[in-house]
Image 1 (cartoon, rainbow, N blue to C red):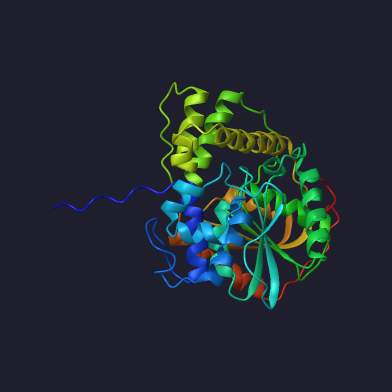
Image 2: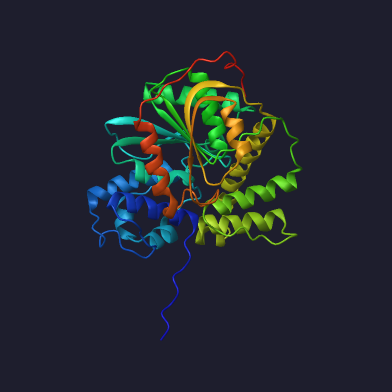
Length: 356
């Protein structure tokens, strides 16, 4: 008899699996695995529940967690219509360590999901935090990258009580992190890691909203490792339904309106960030940065070298969306840790004052 095929996990199930794997110190966790059979116990469950609240915004009691000890059961019976914390811009992804903390700056979609694998590999001896879009907590999104960077800096200094941290940004997150570094000022001990982050020196025209919405759908599905296969002619309500189903699984399939509202907030973040990115003109900064790049691109490297005094370019294997998955996160973590741990030197330059 052919064994039954495993049910494909939704995005929130992937997030839960990553939280469990980090807590249980396992490489992978499946949706049908029992937390307690994998070595979990009540005290560890409390830590997992805290991370679920921080990352997904779900409020779950210990008794509920014990009642539904698999990811599939938890999602089916106790899931909530959100895939992000709705109260905080700054999310703690790991506990404190002896090394300088890392702050991940969100990509254009505004969520922290893309950094979960990387944070697990980097969290053995340092704290890892992630910022998320203001749109996800019901706040307006700043109109420019410069204003968004200022908001993130204010949040970090207020909540961490210091500006002593490193910044890591993938894709659009690299642009925002670069502007944060520029505003923070020269500090040879603060470093920036740019992961496949493209820099375009000129302003561009914003596409029409139909094109932007399709790009949003493709970007979101690709981040979750799902095929971006919406057929031509798919209406916006149909696309939202499909996105909600892939994000939330059974809850969205049952027509939960709040799931669609959450995706609308995500789209608002994406649209605002697209507008800011199209309008930005990147100036120079006296910073140390590493550009982790998967393919040879002389233009991208040259554009960053024009703006970063001390740039180290590190070749990677993988494409834009696969870089931060299970397979490639380890190589990025190794390269990131090696770069952050080496001494830095920053020269002063005269043109380091242009805002984005």
